[in-house]
Length: 59
Image 1 (cartoon, helix red, strand yellow):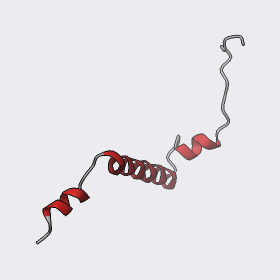
Image 2 (spheres, helix red, strand yellow; image 1 turned 90 degrees about the vertical axis):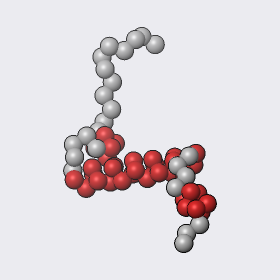
Image 3 (cartoon, helix red, strand yellow; image 1 turned 45 degrees about the horizontal axis):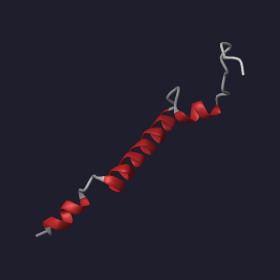
């Protein structure tokens, strides 16, 4: 039989554990979008030259 305290610790989704889970999920989504060739993926945006709009306030 498993230790309930250990199991509760493994399923703890607070603080650093939650942050790491979100980071991992974001990386997985980015990787999947790149593999599928989805337009507008983060890799596509990195390759695209930034465009400055014409309506900039004067310096």
